[in-house]
Length: 365
Image (cartoon, rainbow, N blue to C red):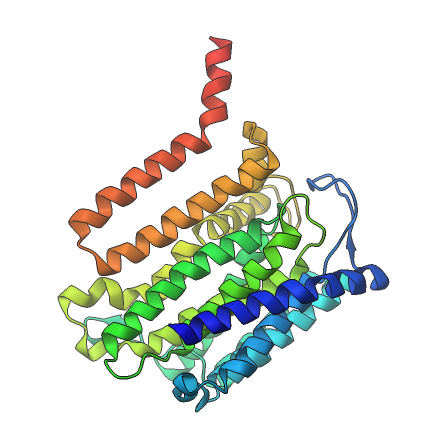
């Protein structure tokens, strides 16, 4: 655990210290987010926060490679594949933050980064269905690229309020870190090192290090360089952990934990995935491109309900924590205990979310 905490702290510290440098670079290059009708910030704000996050992850990985406990992880190409793909997708985001890229060019960059990740061996290796590995090598390659691209864009969608994406990824990444660490302890009695847990620690650290600069009122945005990097890191951790489970030895009692590497990222990003799906359907029904921006995202709807900027962000943090840690608990505690507690937390979160709506209804009555 100490090695992973070192990675987390290093990623957070380096990200925090280098974010002001990224801000100055953004101002110097004109990488500023203008004030648009759909935005909630009131002054043009620098972006390029992803460069600071990339620096944090790179330094954390470099130091981790010298830690004996993590030697088995760095014996393979996995960590450097994740870092290389992360650097590539971050640079694509930098180009978009500075010059503005069209949607297809960004998509091509995302596919290229995901392909690099898979080519270097970080790809889905199994789908545990009834003790049988389902799919071929080509199928898993395609699924890997698809999973990475979808996750990247889901994180990009949630980046709409100050501190929202960084906080959501810190909370969701923490849940994934806990899950992968406990899974590694259960599946390996002698070696607790894990690429998935390493990436999860770096993800949480980079998010926490950036958050103080980004919380309302934000002094810098992460931009596409940051959101796409965080999305790739989460997808990489999820993909890496699939290799820790042998589908041929999955018993009935292990079905839920066996599927969690595939399901937990969806649960962590349930809000942005839902937002993404609703946006695509909404825009297609209106005869628009799914890439056309609007002001109907979930965070906009919370503001319209009457929540303040900070309260809307905290509510989305709450939902992320409830969904992510609730799901993780189901893998390690009896369902008879975990499910009722999870449902109670969901009901309480819904009550807090709809509070302003109830207040307005009471006033009308």
